[in-house]
Amino acid sequence: MSKTKVATSPVPGQTVRSQPSAAGPVAPPRVSARRRRPGVIALSLALIAAGGAGVAVLLLQVGDRTDVVTVVRDVQVGQVLTEQDLGKASVALDPAVKAVRVDKMDSVVGKRAAVELKPGSLLSPSQVTKDSLVKAGEQLVPIGLKPEQVPATALVPGQKVQLVHVPTQGAAEAGEESGKDGPQSIAGRVVKASKAAPGTGVVVVDVATTAADGPIVAAWVSADALRLVLDSPENS
Image (cartoon, rainbow, N blue to C red; front, side, top):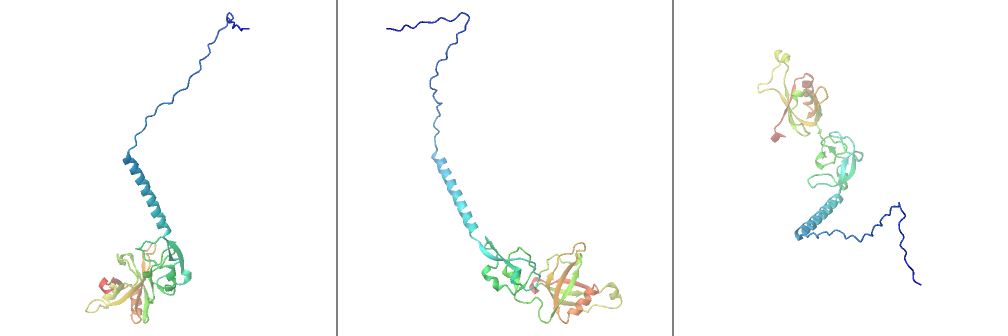
């Protein structure tokens, strides 16, 4: 028995909506293939290789560290170094920097500081000495220098100086005269020079002289009749 499809007519007054037709597959947009340049590829590979090599060198430098001796507390000029004054640190040491290595620490313990040592600094061989800064038969005389009397050249331990007697105006008028060959002077050697005092700017210089000249220099200092003159480098 055959089935007959009966067409139904719309009801009067009713709107008939049309059914949307099924959309077919949408083709993706075509992207043109970008042409690769061999030169650009080679340059990129070279840059990547160079960057990797740089990182490798940096890691090697960071890893190449040296154990050196450091200063852990203040040490004054002439003070004997002890193990408590020294510490250890592992640093990437530049070949131009001369520092005492940890395995050589025993060689500096018991020596004297040739310069003032500050905490946190590396210890170099030139900063210590086995000699006493004030030798047998010498005396240490402190000399205060006003700002206008301080040489522009930095005073350093071991520097040779002349201590010149300059009589005050009143003493000169009373008949105290200098020698015929010029003012009297005494040779000395700088042991330590302090920093300028806040407010006054006075610098105190410890000068080593012979035991016979020490009291004379002290008297000149007391009378404010002394001036410090640097010897030439050839005489130092």
